[in-house]
Amino acid sequence: MADQAEIHIRKEGRAGRITLDRPKALNALTYDMALAIEAALDQWRDDGAVDLVIVDALGDKAFCAGGDIQKLYDTGHAGDFTYGRAFWADEYRLNAKIAEYPKPYVALMQGFVMGGGVGISCHGSHRIVCESTQIAMPECGIGLVPDVGGSLLLARAPGRLGEYLGCTGARMGPGDAIYTGFADSYVPQEDWPALIAALVETGDIAAISAQSEAPPHGAMRDRLTKIDAHFGGETLGDIVTSLRGDEGDFAVDTLKTMTRNAPLSMACTIEMIHRLRGPSTDIRRALGLEYRFTARAMQHGDFLEGIRAAIVDKDRNPNWKHDLATLPAIAVSQMLLPLGKDALTFEEDVSS
Image 1 (cartoon, rainbow, N blue to C red):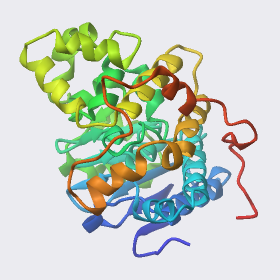
Image 2 (cartoon, rainbow, N blue to C red):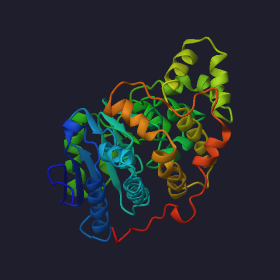
Image 3 (cartoon, rainbow, N blue to C red):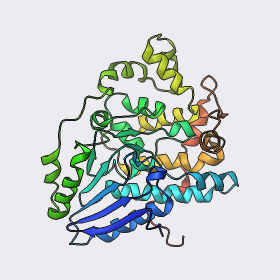
């Protein structure tokens, strides 16, 4: 069970309340916290006393800056890939439940919202940002791909923003988050206590629109023409070639960022977004495709090396399996092949 000092789950008035409480760890999501959130959602689904769910977090720096990946690294480094696969499968099941939840799911996102934090907020029905919000999917920097359903959000973003955000891990402020489809409403953080009180008292989501304001202008809309011009290619190689042919600041800075990330991860991210783009795609298809990559990420990808360089040794000098010039197309295909009997399901493993 999750440590009650790390997450507070309770009913207040007409609301089910979930509050993350690991501010010193930027509210990083642990395995137990994810399971506790899922259990609460299951319990409240048919509870007539709960009209809506509110998810928030303590501290000013982050709603949730990602998953707690230390144990993922430790087990994978020791040659145990089953723990990571079980963690991702259970986390993705939670992400699907949030996206498909039959009651309003209100997420209030301050500060950093990354990785696993996106998974427990940006699939909700009502996603609220404030002046400090910074949302990003920086997984390619650690040898993963945008997951927790993030690939679907990226595929639905305007133009080729999905490829850009996925390959660079660029941060979105509140205006950008709403423009790209990662959030819905802007409410200044000083107004959050009153908003929560109204939601708790009434169970009526109309309180959100009543307190929403126009968000600050974001940068992504202004960059969209350049992003579309460079990120419209079919492959990572096409995108890199386009950027290298442009001496402007945007292209130079973007290419510099991408050269730090895992080429295999970026190439798979682009392929995933292309496969998911279209009106018929849903959260389960996206999570299933992500799981094809993450289930192989430790053994056949760059995840362990990415964590070593970023978190363990902190040398910021990963030795990726491939470089931008020599990444073979077959490597992308192999990471995204169907998993057969090991494919992601959305059923809980009662034996675990």
